Image 1 (cartoon, helix red, strand yellow):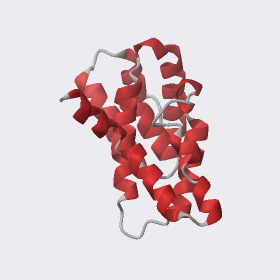
Image 2: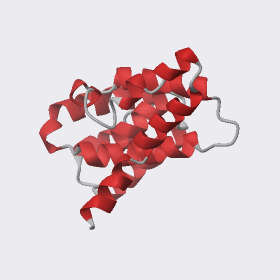
Image 3: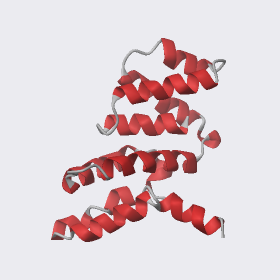
Length: 152
């Protein structure tokens, strides 16, 4: 469910096509066809707005069962794909990242690496693109660093 929640946020920011979100619903449903919630998403909801609302409500109600790390790994992997696209406009990306942060559940907003979404664009206000890029790179690599320290 964490990956679906991440898809909803990315879709809302225009960073993931609707088709990819629907594929994630299909994938989750096929992996667990007895899940009533996924069945409802698969068959009854027409718009991504409806899917987003239902996923948000579901995840809020099942907060204890969700993994911030699973959510974060999926989200950062998809954001890395966007960030590494040729011709990325850093200022547009930064606006989307702040907007993404604003929409996150409160329990995620002030923990790393998600908090970085809020402030990484600050150096742009004084023209320091390099520092903003360093902050985004740190954020995008957050879970890879964690993996390398735990395997040592």
